[in-house]
Image 1 (cartoon, rainbow, N blue to C red):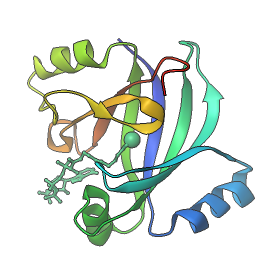
Image 2 (tube, rainbow, N blue to C red):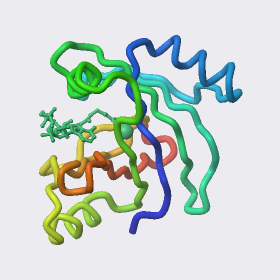
Image 3 (cartoon, helix red, strand yellow):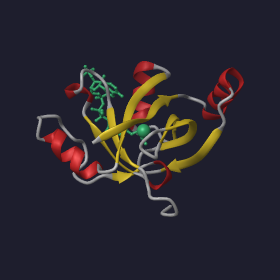
Image 4 (tube, rainbow, N blue to C red):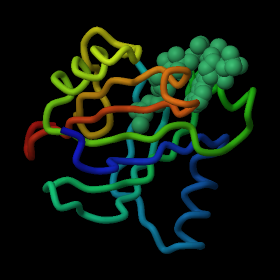
Amino acid sequence: MLTRIDHIGIACFDLDRTVEFYRNTYGFEVFHSEVNEEQGVREAMLKINDTGDGGASYLQLLEPTREDSTVAKWLAKNGEGVHHIAFGTADVDGDAAAIKGKGVRVLYDEPRRGSMGSRITFLHPKDCGGVLTELVTAAEPGEH
Ligand code: CMX
Ligand code: CO
């Protein structure tokens, strides 16, 4: 069951400058940052609020680390902006399988590693009304 908005993914050319914008404009601070080589991104997670399911909602600011990454390709075509939304679940495997059964393309056979040791997969934007949609199961505390 999808129980929260886990994050909104925002693509940018300059992560440090974008972090500064969110700090100066809204007072949001970086909760966590990392490089995910597999996804080709340097990212900052800004925690907005805790959620009733024991998780939290974040903004995920994304800067590409290489020319051939999905985010670099998207930025070249669209410029900066909202890249994807992510729903949180305790069971990404089960929810992805159920959604696949409804005819929506799931991009990975097995969930891959996301922010903070989470397990993630994506639904094809062309099957979701133009919205690239991610499903996330957060790591258990102490797991990452
Ligand atoms: N939102 C909405 N539509 C998108 C999109 C996005 N983020 N990215 C691509 N599309 C659309 C394109 O506009 C294009 O539509 P048209 O054919 O109408 O022009 C179509 O999808 C194909 O786009 P493309 O540029 O040819 O891109 P690809 O097919 O090579 O890749 C996708 C698209 C979704 C398969 C790829 O972006 C992907 O694998 N995404 C999942 C991984 C990811 O995004 N990682 C970065 C974030 C990591 C994280 O959140 O942790
Ligand atoms: Co994401």
